[in-house]
Image (cartoon, rainbow, N blue to C red; front, side):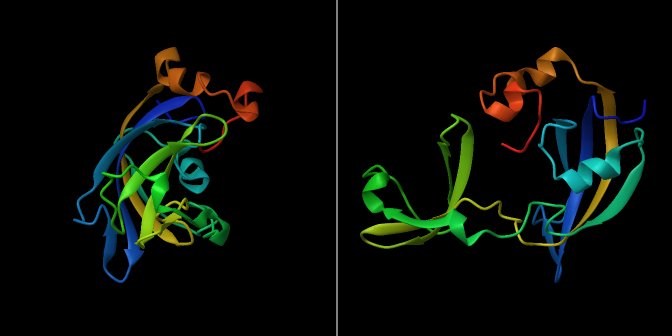
Length: 167
């Protein structure tokens, strides 16, 4: 079966960030499964998957715009330390989750911790970076209603109108 916009796909992938940096950091490919067209993967990567079949592999070069977008300074903010629980262990690099105004889970990374404030970053960790992504297709099948259940529960306007986006 060839990958199309209604496919459920599993791939092994490795991202080369240049300067001998990879993701995952250990340099070993990692498996990920997702429904095409729901924004789980960068648009440029999803486009490169269309028409491929199980066991095929490819390496694609994605600009920051095609991958996780440009780094947005407006997504870096300083918040009061009191926004975190008194027992919260805070240190740079830790990832936390919260909900946005649409009730969707969003993640942020602690950048800096001060006695009265914490600098947090809502950018994707790979935002602003050009990527070289090597992948092999492990499984392709038609997405089932169960696969799409997570997206059907979304209450944002775009999903309610049948659109898709990255949450």
